[in-house]
Image (tube, rainbow, N blue to C red; front, side):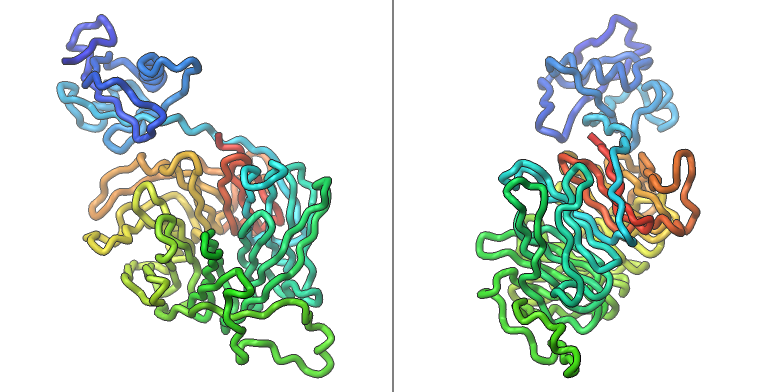
Length: 462
């Protein structure tokens, strides 16, 4: 039986069934509620807060028929062609706040990668920011923009060419990959006062024949694992343990001339891959472990495919062919989808399940250049951020979608310009000078983006 939310006549009301996919906001099972057609988002939000009986009201957004409610219910239903005599299903969720700029971390060269070690995983309860740069150096920062540690260069066991990707493995370990074909594992140690630290090369992983584009980390009880994607079209599976790794293949090791032998660092352990996964016909641009099953991984490539791998057998279990080169990858567990950034400026959400009838479940639009990095909101699995060579970061709410001919489409809800452009300026179409190369969305610090302008921009999105 419907419950009235106003005293207006039924002719000016509509029955709305409110629901949320977030378990934090359970509503009493009261069925459809009669609300005035004049209600807008704020009025509906007040109604939901009243039903929830929370001490502190939460601003909510509402998605009806795949679109945000941004007008009155009456106007919205008219524009959508929905009869006011039907029951309207409205999904509500905390409103996504407009991202607010916090600060920037300035570097000496283009910044290709950024990652955050959360305070919850550190004894000192202070997050640490890891950055990889085109000058071949890793840096560790505190939240006050202080550099705590810088990796050594090539002669000290570090990178002699630019870094393409970098990730924290644990609070005391990091990994980086780049142009010189070697994945490097680093030991990280801070001083007791937390004001300085050291990055020391620990293991060099040999096996790729060309530069390495991407790295992914899987924390496991039986030993952490790494995935690397390379220009040589292969994917490397590695252990971070010296004792759990095979010897480095002799043919992959550097063969220095006599006058360069002094420059090798014999204290850095050399190891090889657990396996090399072969199958792609073009360079591998992105890799990720399945968040639920560490024995499963996904990869994307310039060969326009996304592949699903069974790691114990080193075999491809599924190949999804698209119509564009794929440049980045990110799993969306709550939606059972894989987000892939393309060379055709769109983001394709791919259903990896073998039973899926269509390759692309949704297409996200808005960018004007290639999409090279992706990250999801740690507090809301429906929010996705993308970084592009057009110089912007775009935020998508995947519930805000429209049916197209073959799949759903969605437009970004916010666009973030690089701070280096200055107030009110917009990036050029090709993003020259301000291309975005890396993203990380952290629960505590917010959204961090690395770019061609030699900076990491930090935005608070909560």
